[in-house]
Image (cartoon, rainbow, N blue to C red; front, side, top):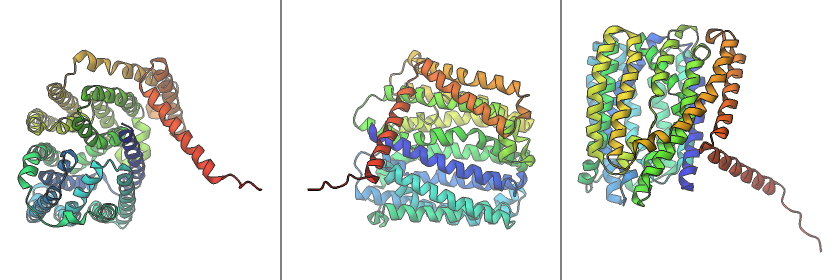
Length: 495
């Protein structure tokens, strides 16, 4: 368990760093690229997201989950991944003009052609990433992510300042993708993997057809939703909704991102050792919600200063969208846990069926909401999130014995901590004149009040995260003592 905790800490630290870099980049780029231009980039990136989902048929998740990893299996994952990547690159290259015509954006074809260079590097990077994930080597993976984020940020700002418009995103992604692939190969030079081989193709595809198929269905559904929004509404509306979603996902990308990355390797390791998955699952929910719920509530409370500070005056329409979507995400109480748990138990067929069910509910909701406008699409998030939580939790309860009473019991203290944290902060906001009038200093005061309330809540309610925080600080103190001892060695004794 200590290796899992260490992996979570390194992964979370890496995600904090990359998120800070991303936020700083967003604050600059949002003032250089308009919502309309950004919306066009979102349409292009959504197209490539579908291609990436298809590539999961040469699944790197297989490298993490499989019990015995042989050289034939390694070579098979790389070979299948490479073949699918090349085939998809040809399809996207030929179809780019048609996609550009569909959205009425001629420059989108060039965007896709440029992005394919970075897409092809994934056939090398993703298998190496899978191997390091299997080893829980998240210290190395976090270093790669931070370096890639720095390169992406610098390239994006430079190209945007040079007025490359939405093409800046494609160029930056190519440069950072190449950087990440080179770093991964340097850290994990598994040269034997890169010799073509199909000996284990049946085993790989039998696993990947359902995990990759589920991912493909979700990505295809997302793409159809984005495509409908791009046609029925405008690229500008797509850009506004995407930015709102990014702000709402800030807690997930920081607090939860380390957990969601480690979840599959961790659950797979526990499953191989026949450990109690139910207790681990419930404990994870309890420790995640105590962070997620207060953060999402604060996102709603501080939406005005957040948007004004990070995006600028051209993006003020994002504010109510952020408040709506963040409220919906509070319903997602087991974020990032259900999918890796199902995969770790080898029930990929169930995952595929679950994806079909969720998409058959979500896609019609988005299609109907799009006819009613941008805000209707935001409100529809409540129905989509609720349906996803219910269906995925039912699927998990079909695999491991989790009574509903235990599920709700794992969350009540987090709910109490959230209330103790947010109510005083809300009162302070009202005393300061309301959310619209909040500046930087007042926003920091609200955050400080919420933080004090959060600490008081976990102590008063004896929340289990209290012991984790104590353990973290104890570990930091031990490390600081070792550093001090190492920097001041004892003088040699004289005779």
